[in-house]
Length: 221
Length: 246
Image (cartoon, rainbow over all chains, first blue to last red; front, side, top):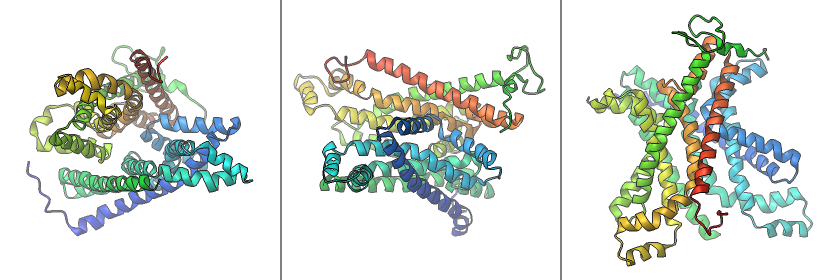
């Protein structure tokens, strides 16, 4: 079989691919920001030392982490309309799902980050008269974020890759854009190849950036 | 929410009639039969892919720690290639693209292609773990092996790998559980595994919640079983005198 990429044009990209790329980035960004905020809350709950906060947070995190993402996507797509009584678009459903799902993974990262801060820091906070929220907000979390920044970003790259799984509910993402273009031009082989290349270039360059960042942070510390 | 209807699993998949005992006899297939066969597909895809991933991942991880720059490059390139493309896209590559370019691949059933897709994808992660495991050993161990007159392969076989493989068992446990979860992506190329079952049976019966619950429970059980097996292995091969050992 001969590969023929001549049908790739700016029209094709702007008609089919760009819309998907924008959605994939949107989804990644929303799930990252929402996931880190929710995940930090979950981590704080798990480290609070209060059983009634620890147990629900741990149950949530462990449940999310033991179900395949595809099933979680399908579950939310099924359950959100059942609970709200209104139909919901695949795109919005995906954003809610990814935020809640990634929160579980980000919370594990944040938990490790918070635990990596020396105990003396917390005691110092208390010693100067700070409350628990103040100690966390002003002393522990800034250090935890900084220590965990490379891991948080690596998880975000994985998150970006995982956004392709919205395929299960038919949302229009980067992969879908290439797929539809391939169907329209009857060139699925080439479009899948280019899709793989685009994902690779994005993820690989991001991972190189993370590596550089990691080195810089390591020196500061 | 609507009431539960677990009897739906006793229905015949074509005629829709209730079958006593829930297991179809003769040519009949109930949803329960289908669910169990789907579980079988999930486990076969995941376990075969795990074998591929462990073999290739260990090899690539080892290559990345050798003194030979070319071998290191091959290992690194492999890892970056398979780590930076989403699994779903890789599965499409194996299913749609490779057979179109290499004709002989068309003879393989899609099951085999998915096993390789999932296996190679996971091999990149395992290669990371194996490399980290080998590099976590003190450099002196490698030098000691070489100084004793062992060749490089012998040093790996008798000195480095027996320790490194034990160190990487905990991360490998989580990769093995991941591979069960990741096998769900195979639904995209119509492998008759659990997620595919959930989608199709849910649509046919309109009993999505029951179907999804059953499938989710089976994923739970499978991942948990792998976890227990790996913990058992970990306990058996523990290095005496290290922090983790009794």
